[in-house]
Image (cartoon, rainbow over the protein chains, first blue to last red):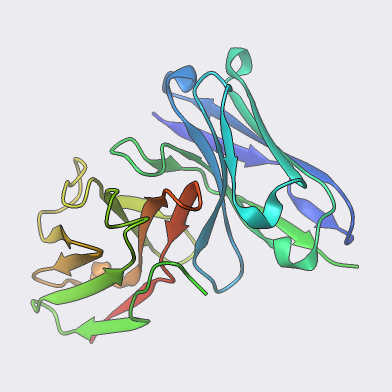
Length: 117
Length: 110
């Protein structure tokens, strides 16, 4: 059974940092592009970043460039999102997702990040 | 403001057909395949349609997708109560080098 389990969310003050993790199981993790997608309360999903199968290429939405870093460890079947200089507008449920735009798309259940003083 | 445009709501009675539109541009829908997701309350989005009109196994054939130029559509035939959910379109945008999502359409079964 395919599973993606996110962790690391929580309450953080503006300007703070947080590192999200996602552990994958039930499929060959190293064969897929992986993504982080967030969804603010009452809003639609917003794609945040993705990373190539071997970690050699990354893309980011403009609003997080220079602040967030996506990475992966294929030996540990794990995906990460390092979030620095957090802002109130980064408050959202963050989903780890496999292959967003293909037949293999699968999303975890998400972890809530709240940026507030 | 979303790069892709969807109507905020759609509704129908059980058994009716409902269509949801998704409008974009040449940098996204016009040159890349469209994906549709269904999101039930308090759950993660789930893949409904990929490559404009392909259904993953397990998705009922009352769901269908189409694309023409810079617009796409999702149709639900034979509407059922369990289809009440939020529906999102998405596509890769070559100008932004990232995926873009529509704002979502809330489908209500009357």
